[in-house]
Image (cartoon, one colour):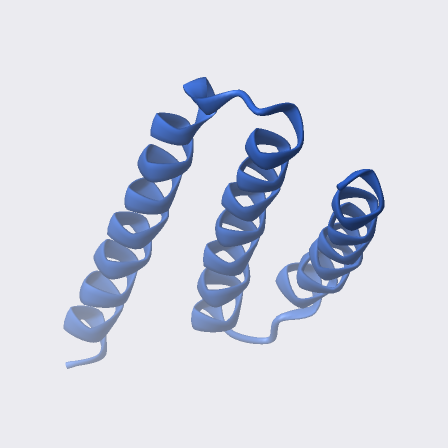
Length: 86
């Protein structure tokens, strides 16, 4: 289980690094919003990996809350962005 957690952690760190580049280099606001949403999803996945590794289920409500906040934030930004384009 330790090897799987380490591999998952390394892959998540790589994904976070690539996503951070997308956020910084994004030419458009929506590109940055998608990048931030992806970064929130990567953080939730990191918490889930930690919960599986440590057998600690106390962080699972945090995973659910983080996923909900990420979704609502992306939906709100995209809604206001569409409204501004009209």
